[in-house]
Every structure is written in C-alpha cells, then in structure tokens.
Image 1 (cartoon, helix red, strand yellow):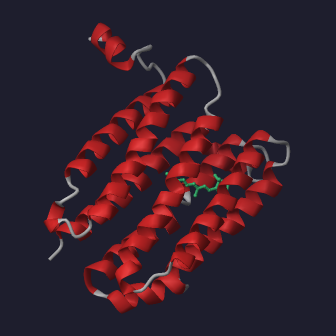
Image 2 (cartoon, rainbow, N blue to C red):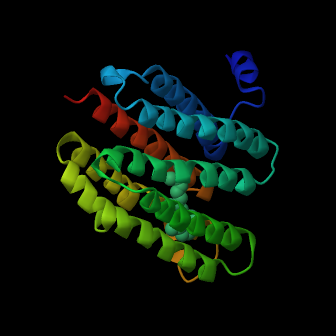
Length: 234
Ligand SMILES: *C/C=C(C)/C=C/C=C(C)/C=C/C1=C(C)CCCC1(C)C
C-alpha cells in the first residue's frame, strides 16, 4: 500500500494533516475536472461554456495542488503557488456569474468590475501574507471582498438574476451563498496564518493551509456543481 501511494503521489506518503489535505485536494480537483469536462453537454449543451469554465477552475487548481503538495512535502513555502492559482481561478468564478446572467443582459462591464475587485482582494492578500503589515493589507483585501459580495447579492447582478428568474435565479442565489459563506473561510485562514489583533482565531486547531484547502474544495467544486445543476434543470 505504501509503495503504491508513493508511486501515485510521486513523493512521500502524507503523514500530517497539511500534507494529507494537499493530497486529497489534488485528487478532488482532478476528479471534479474529469466530471465537469465530461458533462459539457449535460442537459443538451445549453450551458457548455459555463461547464467548461467550471472544469477549467478545478483543473487549474488540480495542477497548482500538485505543485503545492510537492512543495509542502519538500518543506518549501506554498504561498506563491496558492496566489497564482487564485489569481487565475477567482476571475474565472467571476466569469461564471457573467455567463449565467448574459442571457438576461449582463454586460462585460459587470464582469470586469467583479474581476477587478477580486484581483484587488487577492493582490492585497498576497502583499499582506508576504510583507510586514498583514492587518492593513488584510483589511484592504476584506473591503474588496465586501464589494464583490455586495455586487452579486444586492447590486447589478442581483437585478439581472431576478429578471432571468427560474433556474438561473436559483443558480445565481446559490453562487451568492458560496461567495458570502464559502469565501469567508479564506479570511479565517489568513487570520490563523498571520499576526494581528485577531490572534484569538488561533484557537482553531487548523493550519492556514488546511483552512485554505477546505475553502478551495468547497468553493471550486461547489461552484461547478451549481452550474451542473443549472444545466440539467428543466
Ligand atoms: C478558488 C479560490 C478562491 C475562491 C479564493 C478566494 C479567496 C478569498 C475570498 C480571499 C480573501 C481574503 C480576504 C477577504 C482577506 C484576507 C486575505 C484573503 C486574500 C485571504
């Protein structure tokens, strides 16, 4: 069994929670990608581009998890891979909002607004994690995050989703919950991994990487399943 795992992992067998979560994360993202790519024509292919985007999100993550798993086993830092992954996949999640609302009249401007705000969120987070003022940059990142959540929940996107109604509205609402609740997992990981007034969150007995990995699995695979559900809905 151990030999098999060694070959399969091309590295060491995970023997702690952090390594294990990178291992499971890699497998989960790979499996989800296969599922989404094979489901491009689910429900007749009306949501093909959305399904493709869902598959790309988990596929890009799978590749980065593969590298992060390796880096972690080698004792190297995973922050850089983590943020490269996010800077590619989070904008694609913004594209998902746009794609499902496009038929209701969503503009590219709405899409670029979401992409811009989420990029600010991530760049500030990266500076905060790698520099020496995590509180300031984390706060800036949080403000950008609230702007994204506001836009999809109450702003322009909400109105378009209501106009579309039916299965599109349902899918939009589900994605909104992922942004509000699912994405809020990340600032918790950040507070665990950086120093600041918020050090009380350190009572959570999980490493920052484990929290981020849980967040990624829930959000990236969850987003894709919402799209799949939309595609197969009547
Ligand atoms: C697939 C990856 C996703 C959905 C990543 C989302 C990341 C965030 C919502 C990160 C948010 C952060 C804050 C709101 C404040 C602290 C810094 C961040 C970047 C962890």
